[in-house]
Length: 80
Image (tube, rainbow, N blue to C red):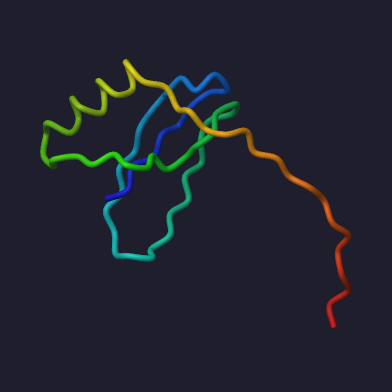
């Protein structure tokens, strides 16, 4: 199971999503404007309805600590 958090620029969690799928399966989550999305590493859930309450507790008491993303540009090459 993979767990994703939608969070704002201060790391405040706005929502959490769990995804169960085969290994290597991809997923695309589109957050609301101004939010980012990241997979949460090292978090496991027991399963069942208790997960909903646990996710609410996590969203209320934790924030996302993610390194700032930096990007660089490079000139496009000609296909050929």
